[in-house]
Length: 219
Image 1 (tube, rainbow, N blue to C red):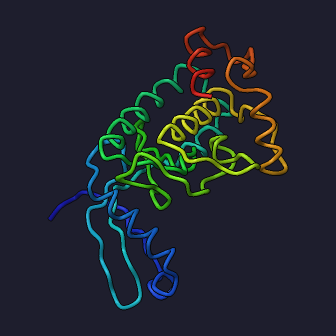
Image 2 (image 1 turned 90 degrees about the vertical axis):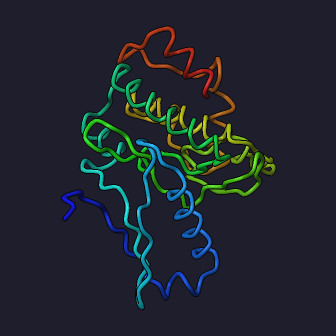
């Protein structure tokens, strides 16, 4: 008998089956986690259907998510953040091989298993395309081409790079790069006023010139 430990995600079957959108999101998530075999991407080992539920049997991650981890320590600083960023980029390199856009990348969707990160929650992901146009995601990490109040634009997987930049900033400094917005329109204006070379980078914790350059390039 195997001593390996797995996580099981139970989903109410009746609720999913009566909602075509939820059904499609579940199928997308299951398909992506099934085809990607990478230590930094949540893996689906089995999809079980019973009379009442769907069950996703996945990797078990023993230490919560990165959002909780950052909140616990207030901020992580450059060294630890770079350690996690390298794993994140390795995962996205693999996702790019399959033309997969995550489209909802944020700290809460980065799980921790000991000192390793595992990216999950692929319900809003898009696979097999180079360009998409659907307006979705979490506003705090959403790329400006989707936030644009005048009408979001078609976008590529570079939107994930933007979200990675926001997460990297959050890891280092314990906050998002801009003031907490009251609306998507306000958030978009804040980004337009202070991104790229105009990005505000706090003096503490201290960061290297290379780190500052990377943040400005991602954002």
